[in-house]
Length: 478
Image (cartoon, rainbow, N blue to C red; front, side, top):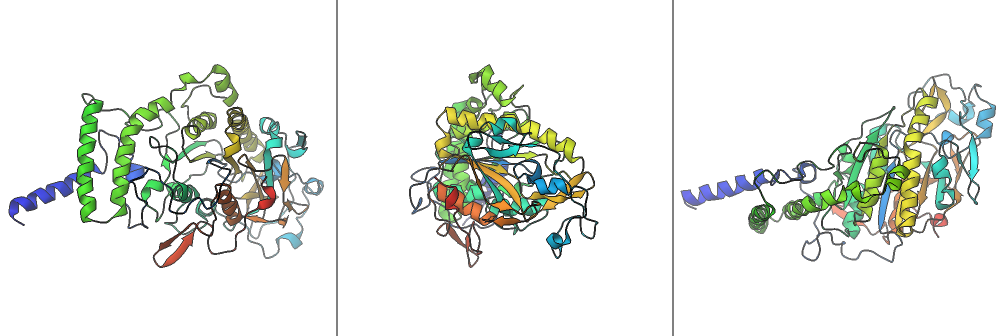
């Protein structure tokens, strides 16, 4: 290779590496960041979001999922699991027979006393499902909910518990459930990411790291894209001044041509990802403004979600945008409301978090029902763990032996309760459901056998449900 050829080759490599950050200010850097070697990618030829070969394994009832993640660990004792016996022994020493040898978070070596629930529970709907009176809007839809009261997890700290709930592992570099789902089934949109994440917060907010929506060792096109909750959800969505859409198209076509040349020389799946995401970024310049145009929504709809100003960073605004994402083919939407870490001021802060989330959650469920979407949309509500039935000052500590979640839609039996905890809400004692069981059940609803959704990586045969036994909870499915 002569000197001119060397200069040309160096220039091409430099241009490609720098263009990785974006074209016309729209690169979705979080989606396209530098990444280590990954597992094999899926061909882009047939569809921008194709399913993996052989998937789905059987017809599934779910097409999309919204995970309403109550980050911080909402107390099951104030939400979904009434315990009259705990109320009766309020303030008394907590029975040592429950806690001896058990893992506790910040209550180690402390004097443990029972703490009653400060809320009243009520039977809702024709099913008579018992829920806290602090969730009146969601309670009116109780006949659509399946409450699982026997959830358990393995991790007692926030970040690792979120990682376990999302990826089935605490090891960094493992794909989250949204990425696994996209990898297996693809998405139904070419103009928006297949997996979108939004966050909101209130008192008791804990940070949530971006690794919770990472694609891990899967190609990075499958990772979640974090939309901004306040203002424009995607930065730099418009063209720079003086750059028209046709000019932008020409620039991207040239970048794609150069990336194609690089792909022929280096068989790196991340180059295919780069090509696909440049094209999506271009299409998002049209799709995102239409997505966020809330002028299409009626005043009644905005009021139902409790939205005073779309894009105001609230959980209600995120719920409304989630419905618009789902109806436009986005496969997985995850809403984090960071407001549930109540080590102190439980009564005050729990009420604030419940008030902020109850109306929008119910509005989203009702909206999906009214549009005929709930029958093939899975809705999951819950946190990364529960809270102790023992007091921690004016609050409750982290708890892994029992917590509650609810599910709705996509073939889940509504108006039902599955599993139970002991009389004090300390431990799951009937029909325990692990995080791996929850993942296996979610995949089953999409027509995916969790044992078959595997990837070979670094000599390991890896899957979302890990190596421990996991079961599909058929009893909650219609």
